[in-house]
Image (cartoon, rainbow, N blue to C red; front, side, top):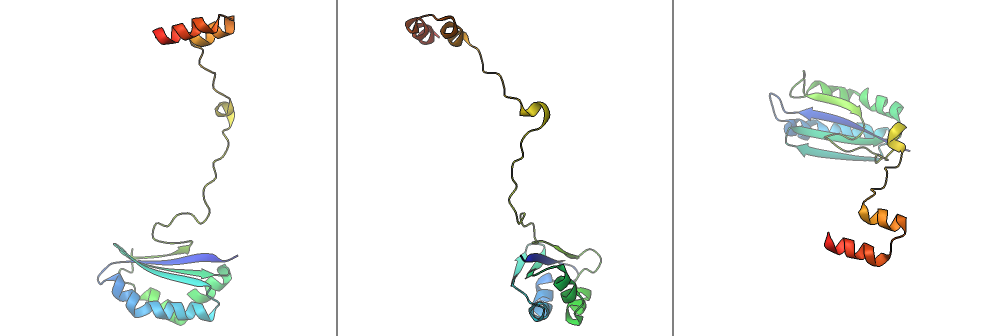
Length: 139
């Protein structure tokens, strides 16, 4: 099974799009040498995201240690707050696995009582169905 890894670059003293145009192909080429399965580059309102699908985290470390990738990460427009490198899809992407609802625990696992209104009382007492229908029409 493969895993996604992301490089997110925010706009800074220059545009992150310009950074992507200059260094994006070098990052993809370095990842292809290590066995890149898939990739995606996206421009967002605040910057750009490069997503790489690799076989495991060891391959990711090899890609990160490549000189071209190191030079690209050193050249981001905002070197203080403009770079995020992490596992998973980037740019506010959802989880790679959908959330599964978990069963309630404690008192939340108990069934709620059935409302016991006048119609239900009459049926429980054994009153005739005609009386129940009359009561429902009157209400």
